[in-house]
Image 1: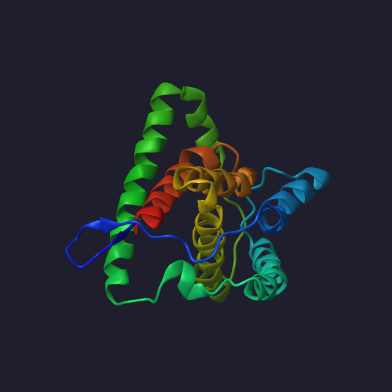
Image 2: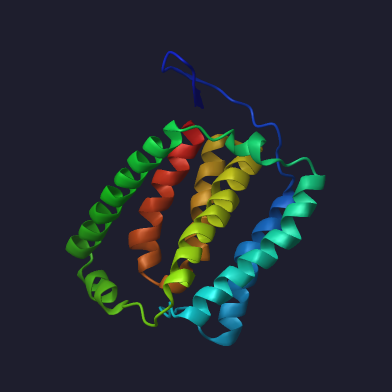
Length: 205
């Protein structure tokens, strides 16, 4: 869905839709492979956010972009066809989405803590460890969201829209949460509500 000048919404048909083999390659590379490597190494759950871990994440994302994007480009994918041209109002919209996402996160955390007391203990125990230089933190804060939102929203929702918008949104949410499974219970209490807010907003706009 996309808003027109009057504030109403109109149906938008994606200009490019991913085939099953294409989707399998992209999400196998960005979700399946990291999960498999984590399981093989016996460290699926980790809260190490030290500099080496963050740089490793950036390196893995750089490899994924270098491998997948040229191939996707040859298959007809272009940035503007899936995200549109940026406009100044996007900053205001982004702040609004961020506010709603944080509210959803706190509601989720409180709900789990009240109705599933054991999850509260798990959340308290999930304390990030490690330290990193300011430039590494800034680099991760800028690059990681660009890669993740392109994969889960720009490509994911658009590519899977051929199976219905609701299916695409649900699949995008599932893949995003699965990719953060190493965070344990936090993947459900924090990543899930953010994924819902981001995916629904993207699908509607």
